[in-house]
Amino acid sequence: MKKIILSVLCCFFMAHCFSQETGEDEWGAWYMYFGTNRVSDKLSIHSEAQFRFYEVASTFNQLLLRTGLNYHINENAIATLGYGYINTDGSFEDIPGEENSNEHRIFQQFILKNKVGKFKFEHRYRLEQRFISTQVDDFTEHRARYRLQLTYPIDDKWFLNVYDEVFINLQEPIFGQNRLYGAVGYNVKDNLSIQFGYLKNHFTGINFDRLQLGVFFNTDFRKKQDQ
Image (tube, rainbow, N blue to C red; front, side, top):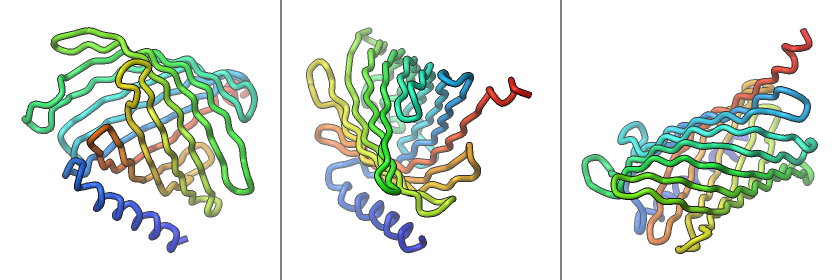
């Protein structure tokens, strides 16, 4: 297990070294919480908060809050209708950059899961309607996202998680961004896990290197109703 974790961390380091030619010179960080809160056999509520920084522990970049109603078609298929609020500071330190913005986002999502041996696959399809306000303009954009995620359990506690997600704008320019992610995860208990990983966030002409710390905490209110 130690050899596997060491190999993953080495890959993160090598990816960062090669990214400096075209990307930002700072390590950024995303601190994230995700929750699936089951309220019935078919319904659950998605809860999410992300705090994103240009540097590991300073220079705020973005706050993202997201929620949604999940409909569990079966164990391997989930449909979601949701809402997100995103506040973005487009400047790095005191250097003017992109305009600051507030965004209200509606999204529709469909998740399919399957398993091949020990490998767990997850396909996530998402459509977004983005209502964005800046200091100078208000406008609406639409985009589609597809994420392929692979999880491999090392043992009962440790696991590896990787994904690639592509963002396609439904207006010009067509290519939005691509996110390549790898992480080591630990199951604290059945409904609580943490992941520490690295994200390569690629835009046209620029790349960002982001460390990620994610907490996944799921609740089941059905148990309380039965007591």
